[in-house]
Image 1: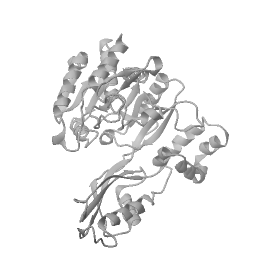
Image 2: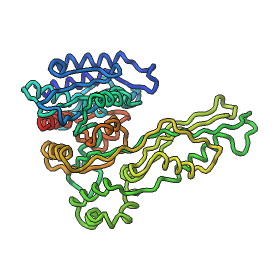
Image 3: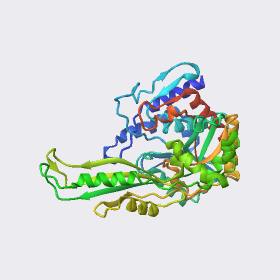
Image 4: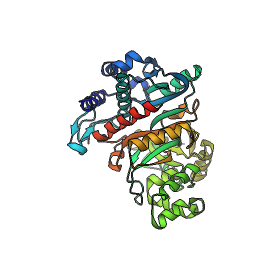
Length: 443
C-alpha cells in the first residue's frame, strides 16, 4: 500500500510543470508555488516536525535536527525541469502516466529522472522514518533547488545561508551517477558510478561582424561562411585526452572485475595508460567525454531576410571543462583551433571544474556501504561527472560532495534525460526510496 502511495505521489508531482527558463520572466512561477503546496499536503510530517524555510522565493530548505549538529549532512535535489514540447512523446510529458506490469512497470514524464524522482524519493524516505520515530545522530538538511536547469541561483543562495550559519556538512549527496550495467561490456556486474567531481560548464559565443549587402553579389567569404569555417576547425580540433587520478581509479576498479587482456590493461593502468586512453576515446562518446574537455555547438543565429547577407552571425559553444584543466586553458585551445582574429570569442557564462572529493574517510565509506547493502553485487566506483549540478556550489562548504542518483538506469533510459519520453522503472524508484531510508538511518 505504501509503495502504491509513493508512486501516486510522484505521479501527482510530475503533473505540475515546474519548467525553469533562461528568462525568469517567462517562467510560470505559479507552478512552483503549486508544487510547494503539494509537498505540504503529501508530506505532513516533514512539514510539521522539520524546520522549513524558503530561499529566493522558491528553493526549499528543511532542517531535521539530530542528536548532534557537529557533523551534518545534506541531501540535495532540484524540482525544476527542462521544457518538454509535447511533439514526439509516446505519452504526454506532464501526465505522469504508468505503463507495463511487474518489473517492466514504468512511470512516464518530465522530471521522473531529472530530478523530481530524487526529490520525492528523499521525502518519502524521510516521512517514513519520521513516522517510525527516528531521530538521526546528526542534523540532516534537505535542500531542493528551483533553477538548477538554468542558473543555479537557488542552490548558491542556500549555500550562502548555510555558510553564514557556520554549517559545514561532512557529506552532500546530489544527483549524478546511477546504477548502470552497460557502460563497459567486459564487466557483467552492475556498477554504481559516484561522481566525486564534475566538469566545469561554460558558454562561449563566436561572433562574426561583417558588411552585408544583397545576396545576389556575395563576397568570397561572407560572415556566415567565416563562422562555418571557424566551427569546422574547432570541431576538427578535439581537446587532448588525459587520464585523471579519478579516471585511473575507475579503470582499476573495472579491471578487478574484467578478465583476459582487457582486465590486465585496466588493472595496470599506471603504466598501460598510453595504450588505453586512445582505445577508450574511440570506444564511445560517453567514455571519450570522461577523458577530455568537450565542445558542442548548440545554437546558431544570423540573418534577417532570405535575400540579404547577414552582418552579424553568432554561434553558441557549450564546453565542459575537464577537472585537470581550466577555463583559461580552454580559451587558449579554442583561439588556437579557430585561428581567425575576425571571429570574436567571448565568455557568456564562465564555470571552472569542481574540486575532487575524497574516496576515503567517513562520508565516502558510509555512502559506499549503503550502496553495497541496498544494491547487492554492485561495484561502487568513483568517476568525474560530465554534467553540471547544484552540488558545485556546495564545494564551498564541504569537502565530501558526491553525485549519485540511486536509480537503475539502462542506456535507453539515460538517453531520455533532457529528451523525449523521459521515464523510469517503478521498481528503480522504489529501490531509491529504500536507499535513502537506509542512508538516513546511518547518518
